[in-house]
Image 1 (cartoon, one colour):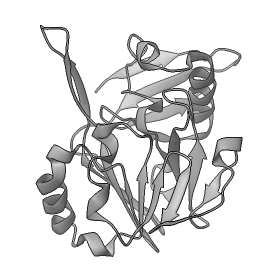
Image 2 (spheres, helix red, strand yellow; image 1 turned 90 degrees about the horizontal axis):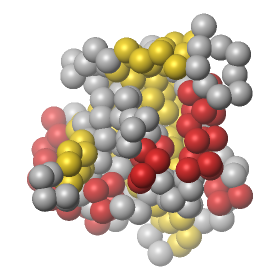
Image 3 (tube, helix red, strand yellow; image 1 turned 90 degrees about the vertical axis):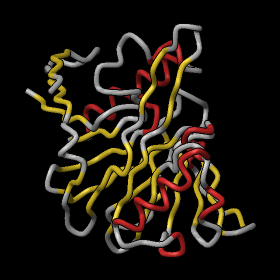
Image 4 (cartoon, one colour; image 1 turned 120 degrees about the horizontal axis):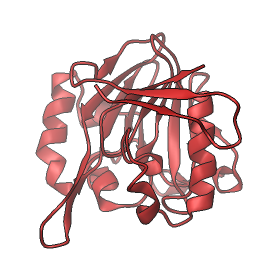
Amino acid sequence: MTKIAMKPSGSRGNRTLNELSETDLDIAGNPYSVSVLKVGYCVSQPDGSFRADGTITLLTGPKTVLVDTGGPWDQEFLLARLKEKGFEPGDIDVVVGTHGHSDHIGNLGLFPGALVVVGCDISQGDRYLPNQLADGQRYPVDEYVSLVPTPGHTGRDVSVLVSGTCMGAVLVAGDLFERCADEESWRELSENVTVQETNRQEALRTSDVIIPGHGLPFRVHRD
């Protein structure tokens, strides 16, 4: 388990971040439960390239919500994991791509009947729905799940906030956080470090569990 103590800028309190284990990827809740279907990764290679894939998360409750779909190379894996959970692609009500990078939205085509969110675009088929995500306003999926604008990594990132789980409020954060211990890496991947830092601090203030884009979920403990 990774345990990190940090004092956020502009705050009087301390926070401890505890990385969850591979056995803690299913978070029960009422009415929504959260399951990490695949833990994302990002690994540097000797030739200067890196291998990366995004975390894939499933929310089950009044609606079935898939957050990020992995890269196009994940198609068979994603279908198999959904089947293990008892779902076919047509059962998914909402698909969220936290941002437009290929390792997060590579399998959107599997879900033509779903409400599709990519960044600040929300569409049902070819019908695009009005929203104010780009203006900093949340978009409710229902009473318990909402889309939260969290730009910085790109200009149109969104995260998904889930309330009512056994661990409290869970934020499926895309690449707002790369992983639990990402202080040495996230800035070099950010389009706007200042904006992303502000949104990271807000996430740490308001969420009990954060599911990052390229690592295990982690809990946020506040003094």
